[in-house]
Length: 224
Image 1 (cartoon, rainbow, N blue to C red):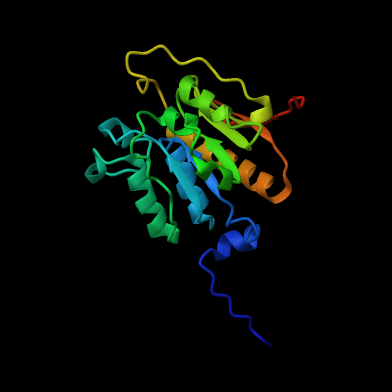
Image 2: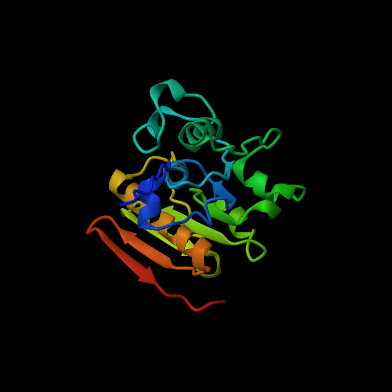
């Protein structure tokens, strides 16, 4: 009997669902917080290696519980820390250089950013309406998947054509609202599957996640 030797870094993922043809697609992760950072790491562990990371924030103490940082990372830029982690996982070369930019939304509003032409898919993981509006402005020229969470322990994975920008939560501190790891992890898993389905087949599936009862519902919208 002939034994076929398989020596693959992502053996288990490949046996489950061979995605070799799409792992070189260029993904723009917009917002590298609870959703964006965890999503990028999840995709890198599945074999993806081309990321453009967009975030202006630095790591603060309250980020430790919901984002993949460590105490020694406090004060560092999220994009730099995430890029280092992605490289450690899969030698990912992530674009993170946004010098001279005043805010996260300004990165997308600048008209001279030729890098956007190379992106196969933008994933909007921003947590405020101004940045989300900038992300939605990339459509219809680019494909944009919007991933978000609410203070009601629910999340959404919604494609560009069906997306409505939600209002900001009125809080003294925009990060000062309940956010469960269950919701984060469920939303990351669902958005990962939606991304892979799109890159493989062009299908755009929308989902609503309710971490209160652990339900995931597909939502159908009429194409605009």
